[in-house]
Amino acid sequence: MSTTTSSAERTRGRIRFTIVAMLFAITIVNYADRATLAITGPVISKALGFSPVQMGFIFSAFGWSYVLGQIPGGWLLDRFGSKMVYFGSIVLWSVFTIMQGGVWMVGAASAVYVLFALRFLVGVAEAPSFPANSRLVAAWFPANERGTASAIFNSAQYFATVLFAPIMGYLTVTYGWPSVFYFMGALGLVMGLLWLKVIYSPGRHPTLRPAELAYIAAGGALVNLDQPGEAAVRPSAASQLGYLKQLVRNRMMVGIYLGQFCINAITYFFITWFPVYLVQQRGMSILNAGFIAAIPAICGFSGGVLGGIWSDFLLRRGWSLTASRKTPIVAGMLLSMSMIVCNYVDAQWLVVVIMALAFFGKGIGALGWAVVSDVAPKEIAGLSGGLFNMFGNISSITTPIIIGFILQATGSFNGALVFIGANAAVAIISYLVVVGEIKRLELKPV
Image 1: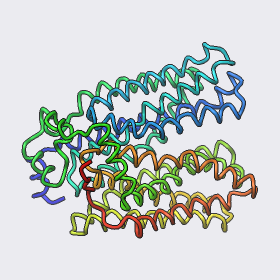
Image 2 (image 1 turned 180 degrees about the horizontal axis):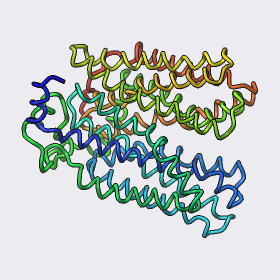
Image 3 (image 1 turned 120 degrees about the vertical axis):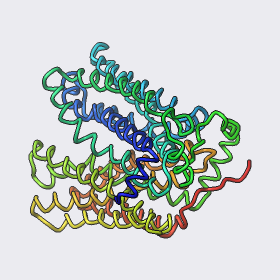
Image 4 (image 1 turned 90 degrees about the vertical axis):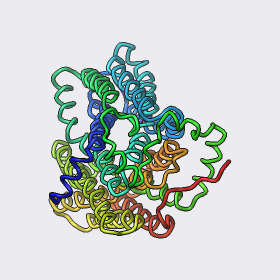
């Protein structure tokens, strides 16, 4: 960064970077709360006598409710604004997390149902989080910084595993599994109070300089998205239904939804079946597989940040918005397809290197939230993000099931790696052929 640029940045102010730092921090806690059961699950199942089928039943609760809650969550964001809806979301998922630590009190027979219900409620409560992240990025960042900002909050999902998995493991061993839920829930409540202190819409921030407000507005930020004066442009429920139909009938949006579904399939392979692959097909111990599974997470985090920086760099160099967003996505998905090569190598170290490269590529290509911030209609920015996240997270349900069927039919992960690589290929085709020009969608009056 040149001296002139640095001086201009100091004069303008950097409040927007405080906003994205808050998004990054709360998303780390968000994903860590999702992982509580993954860390404590083996101990809980032994302590309460849960069968593998019952544990699978409990694991599925979050995914189903999270998908179903996306559109209602988006509606709430558009109706009541990002700050208070997100605050309510943080408080609710934190309370439900704390309550999971007490399921042992109801007895083993009832605990499975109570735990399922609480995980289901956590999924509902967390549903507005990513649409709200996208909404805040659209309000606070000009187009040429939006890719980096979106990549930062999206990369928190990888960082959460690296940061909190050891902490939750220590708590489980030292203080017992309920302590994990108590600790994470209490941390969430503290973060909720910090959220109220930090987050404002651009027009209402108490210390935002006029120069920074003018800069982000000139760059295309939706600075009035949550202003009280904007209530008149917030559509009724009937209007939102009409707008929703326009979204799902728009070719660009359908291509973006399909691309996100495929990109998320890669994520859910790594957070579900990848450790099993290392143990069953590559002969690693469970301990080694646990440590090695963190390597792709670190690479995904690095790739995620790099992808956003690269995209914004291209935009500042004069590339079109379409080319600036699509180039990292296509390049990242091509790298992700490299995992298929693992079917033809035997050395464990080489398998780890290839898988790390594949997840690094996935991180680079995970620019879907930046694209949504670029294209979401201002009238329904929250609903648009919710619909996008709903379609993307359907793969959280389908990917583990399809891979399970492939394993049962073939007894090998080879077909599973081809399936995941094919998802990366479809994401490329979707962005190159279906999406077309990336631009903000203009809705027709309803």
